Every structure is written in C-alpha cells, then in structure tokens.
Image (cartoon, rainbow, N blue to C red; front, side, top):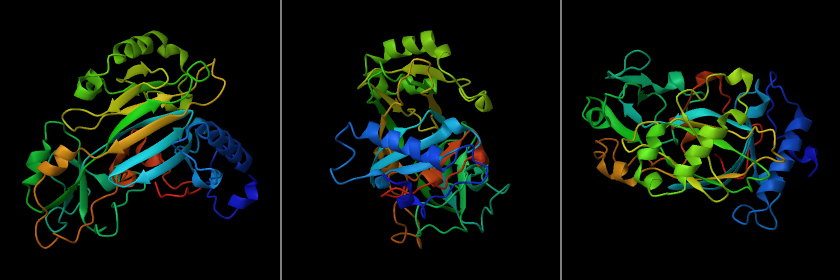
Length: 316
C-alpha cells in the first residue's frame, strides 16, 4: 500500500529514531504477518486498520503495530513489536477534588495517576477531568479500604490479559518477562505446559537482547518462553499490578512474532465494588475493555509516547 494514503494521518515525533519509510516497512511486515491468522482481517481490510505506535521514540525497538478487533467489555488485540516496554495495569480510584486535590494531596498509600501515567486520560467523557485519580503504590493498602475513604466516587478496574503466541517459534522466538506472582493465579496453575516454559525461559533468557537504553527493564521479572499456541495469563490473585514486558530480539529470528492479547476487567472485582454514590449514579459510563490511557503504568513513566503514529480503525 502506498505511503501517501497515510500521509495526512501520521504523527511522527521530531525526536524519533525512525523515519516514515522505516515505519511503513514495519507496518507492511506486521500486516503480512497478522494476515496469516483469520481472526484479524477480512478480505477487504488493508493496512489502514492497523494502529502504529512508537512507545519510546528514542528506542527503535519499541515500535508497535496493533490490530484491535473489539474494545468493549472485552478487548482483543494482535500485537507485533520487537520489544514491549515494562508496564502493568493498575486499578484507578476516583475521588472528589474537594476532599483530595491531587498531586501530593492523595489518600495514604496511593499516588496521583496523572503524575505517573503518560498521556493520562479519563476512560470517557462522563468522567470529569478535574477529579482526582489515584493508584495504589503501597501494596499494604487494600482496595477495600479505599472504597471507604471520604470523597470516593468510583473505581476503574484494571484489565487482566491473556497472551497467546501465534507465530511458529522456529521462525520467531519471544521471551515474556512477568511478575512471578502471576504463576500463583489459578488460570496459570491449570496450564501444565507453563512449568516447561518457565524452565526454557531460565535456560535461554540470555539469548534475548534487551535494548541498551532499557537496561533494568526486566529486573525482578521471570522469563517465560512459550511455544506456538501456548498462553500466559497476566494477572495476580490479589488484583495488584502484574508487571510484564517482552523481547522478540533473538539472533535466530527470521521475522517478528505475532502475540494475541485477550483482555477484560475481572468481573468479581467489578461486582464487589460499592455502588456509585449519588449524585454520580447513572451518569458515569463504564470504561471500555482497554482503558489503557487511564490504567497503564509503564516503568519509564512520562517518557512514553501514547499518541499513535497512525490511528487504526478502532481507537485503542
């Protein structure tokens, strides 16, 4: 597809390490790879349906192509990226700014989400931008206690994700790094192949390259190498943030890997949270399944560029 089709839609940052041709080449390669799998494109879909992002423009390996199939109560994505930077999905608690004004004035054990989430945005227009949005940064602070705090309005639950490696690993190896607490989740405990995947990760982790600019990105995380069709659930049983990232940078790789992501907010947490107080009840529209600009906390914080290089057919 000719690059001029996207000419007026691209938003390339001035400090990017890649140029338009680099982005187009990556987009074409990602489209060709995803086209092998029937869950992504119809016969009439072209590259225009893909979203193109560059999370850390100074690090070329963090370019990212995304196919979004649906973004509602459940979100489905196809992802292609050489290196996915470390991040987690954090529950966000919303407070009346007359009670907690934000920045340093937040409930004990929390941090102002606007200070740590690059490009922070409420999930939709029914959520007031002047409200105070916080995340737990002290794991001794339970979410139930925040529900009882004065000024509490509502909570935006963070999604759980399920990754599936779709690519033939003889052509493209990918190593996922994850909070070891994820292995205690019943979903992962029920996947017998994960024991071998963890062993492979420990044995071969040094074969995967971490970009020099992202030194320390995988510290404290457990490496996991999945075979084609195997899955890894990105969640903790205590609903705390589950840090993860991945490297698709391996000397033997012939192409990039395609990783599928299914995500949804945990229903048991949504059901457990208290009713929205008056006068907000009935006015707040629940967040879509992928409230990324509200709940995603990256290790590199405000260095992240959340504005897409090119928007896809569904807003991610």
